[in-house]
Image 1 (cartoon, rainbow over the protein chains, first blue to last red):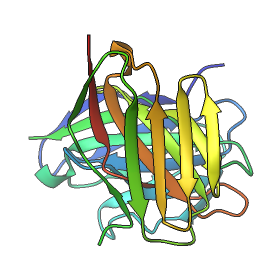
Image 2: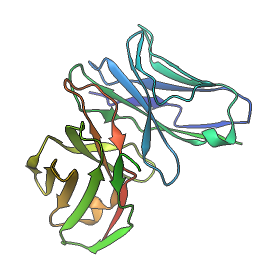
Image 3: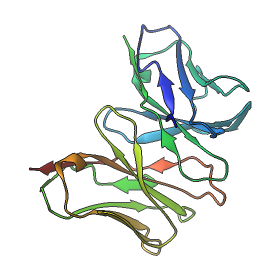
Image 4: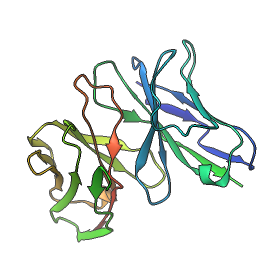
Length: 113
Length: 113
């Protein structure tokens, strides 16, 4: 059973460009979470999604950030007009229904130049 | 005040020693407590999880929760060089699972051969 998959693993963007990060949950998992890890900081929750629904986006910056988990295909975290402060590791986790266990992917390391 | 406090270390111990890692928290709604291990530039790996107060043992690892003191611990017995990693505590208050995790900042552990 393949684990949580994220791509790309590394992404370099210039200031003002858009970044798209993809996450495919583990088979049988219908719940997806996105977290951000800044250098020397712990993981910070961003958004929690189920298929076609955003359940909790309390950790998402109000502007430039959006997330979706369509009926078909991976979950996508989109950052518009990136700034240097967006440079971080972005992790996706998935879980099956009614479970508190979250399994993490390898992360996407975003560098904004 | 952060919801979850964790000593960032770094912590260095000789091989074979018992390691104690700890977190304190302020939100009394937290009920599920997890420990993740994260190797450098990798995704967090779920090690242990416990519900409410008590102990749980899995091989060389023991997780302990004291809700009255809002204090959780992870003990590693017979530590090995392969245990060298950053250890993250995480918790949530979900009644039925599927809720965002709140993380500590992580403790960087090095086991010296």
